[in-house]
Image (cartoon, rainbow, N blue to C red; front, side, top):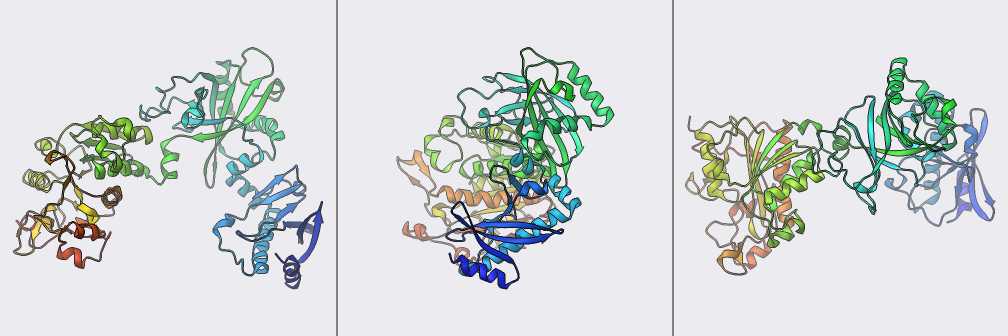
Amino acid sequence: MDYEAITQHLVKQGYQATLEELDGVPYLKVTVDVSDSSVELVHFHVNEFSALPEFWLKNAAVYGALAHVLNIERIGYGHICIGDRDSISVNFEQPHLAVEASLQRHIDQVRQSIEDSEWNKQELVREFITNWNNAVLKPSDPQLILAAKERHLELMHVFNPRKGSGYGYASFYLGITDHVSDISEFSSIAPTNTDGRSPAGEGYVVPLGALSPPPVSRDELANWYISTISSLPPGELSKLEKLVSRRRSNRFWVVFNGDTTSGTAWFGVHLKPKGKGKRTLPLKASNLSEWSIKPIQVTVFNKERILPRGGAKISLSDKSVLLVGCGSVGGEIAYKLAASGIGKLTLVDPDVYSLDNLYRHVLDERLIGAGKALGLSLMIESKHPWTKCTHVNSRLLDLRGKEIRKNFDLMIVAIGSPTHERLFHDFLVENNVSLPVINTWVEGYGVGGHATLDIPRSKGCLRCAYVDHSDLSRGLASNLNFLESNQDVTLNHAGCGDLFLPYSTLNAGQTALIASDLSIHFLNGSIPESCKVSWKGDDTEALKAGLRTTHRYQVFQKSLMRLPLYDEHCDFCNND
């Protein structure tokens, strides 16, 4: 890297740039005038620019707490955050331009932090957790998972990690309040699953309202803690004093939460008396001298925080879906719906999960021999603790005559049996059951997959997908299919009792994606009319097997697009 040329370019552009050396380490120094003082930015030489060149603020401690500047006391420099440097495309072919572009970003960041005190304070609060983690926490400090639903003053029971646990929920300290009843009993964080965890002391959740900037260093933690407690509104402080007076312990955990412009920040401290015996939580400076205090990293485990962070929607938590068919496609659908935030799933399937299913089903080998519906329920509730699952050992046609209209917002049928699907559709129509239904299926050899959404009282129904376009009659095969009907598509390895449809887990997953996408958009209210979606795959393997594809396959160019389901020749839709 030619830093001589880079420095000359910066000087030519008006920067006060020089090449320096510190203990044999070369660096580029740029001096900038900020608020009537000289600020020095330093860039240590590198061999190539794979990210935006990095500049450090010299003597950062002199300027106090600066937003987006992490003061590293042991080296006397501050790390300046200008965003994700790796995500920006760097002009590495012209290093002088890359350095200039990055330098100006660093200068603008430092100048605003120093000159605009109000903005600096607001940014310190907005980035509260980042500043807390960087300035106060150490990797060895306790990590607490807190199961708390509400943000109000309350008692917290704390448990130690399970012995021998090196990862997963069990490796963290666990805090539980009284407001976690909506967590599935199969979740490792449920209050009923604390076996193997010993008590780790008492704790409290303390809401603060609007936050102030965090302590600038670990040494300031004790003073910050007392100042924070003292600044509580008189009524809240009185409630805390009353709550604290009732309990004594040799370990206390205090979790705070407060409002920032970027959301609610959760953080905390761990207190342990320097002497023996149990005591009440110290709330005044005169008592704190008898305690050791250190910060803790808090991860809050509640629906309001975890679901949006993972892309799920809180608005779906009150939706109830009936899924019939828990095979490779249905299993993927169930998993994706739970991950999207669906609150209630009723899973229906009479089949048992077998070793033959292993490579294209979401369940693992530990559930071999269990009913597929039961296995999915256990897996989903342990992974997604705010989705309640009910498993039913039944078949689609067994659901006829049952009162299902009032219990579900949507029904999904993933059984791959067109006769059963048509019979059930006719039952719904003849009995005026106003239940939206998605039917979905995958075709053999990966040629494609399909999903139809039948919304009552809108144009289009499942029978529209069965109009035979050769004579406009009610057909027996779906007109969406890519393989012609009356062909032997199934295979077997041990006679007729071992028949199976050849397709991969990718084919099942792609079909589940289109069905799940239809489900979520419908439940969110963005699909008002019945529709259909198909994905088109490669036909090489199907042709090798001697199969014929349909005309639709040959001309189809609208994979993954939602198209109207309605067919003007459907006698069900046009029987007024």
